[in-house]
Length: 356
Image (cartoon, rainbow, N blue to C red):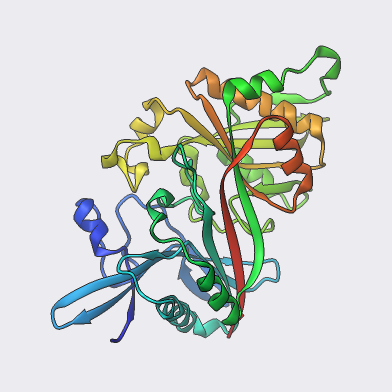
């Protein structure tokens, strides 16, 4: 049976969501999906590739496996590909995943060496859906649908035998807003000399953070701090909120958060940006801090930014706060989050492989 790769969303999704359209040509994408192009070695590549493996028998196409792929430039200035957790549409053996890797490597063969990063969802939330985005991508999918798609331990062994190595373990934390506010009460003599600006526009933050003189230590939905590979970063500004901290007119810390878009009615998914009015008025209950950063590891600064953020969330009807993804090796943040009441509710593993 010959397995082929098509740059499109799976056919099963179109049957559920009639307003989507696509074509074999990679330049066609779902309506309302924000996308851009990445230029590398004088070649332009789509910044979002919905990859579906399928086999065709006579006039029947059967989709087998699906994954979003995001090209980006890594810290070594090389082209890298980030693959979201593979979703089995028709259960097969692991060789199908290797076909996906091989096909993508061929697709990008003009640029020589490519680094693959594979996202594997390890622990899914048990009580509430994960907040958007659910993976390292701003355009994502509901990972609660992956319960029957979890890779088994022997699959991990096979991936490592194929040259993949553990890159990082990332954690998402959750806590009730009232618990946080109780644990974050700041006495007047504990306040730091920071100036807090509320509702700071996300696009303005993006401009500030692109300043080459910025010394900000960023944490966000990216596996590289040097360059976010998210497709069309400005699209999320429709609903995001920012909190910034300045000292002597210099930006020293910031938080950005967004409501949990998976709480929206089914008809608004999977492309919620088609419904900007709904994004502004829907009664969301969970907010997610999806990007944050600071110049220094300062516990007081982090707590003050978080306190102000949770106050704004509560004003907007939010009852739970999520923050992610936190590298498991970041002991400063993991210890601080545990101390103020956060619990891990979602985790994923990133594997890495260099290919030619």
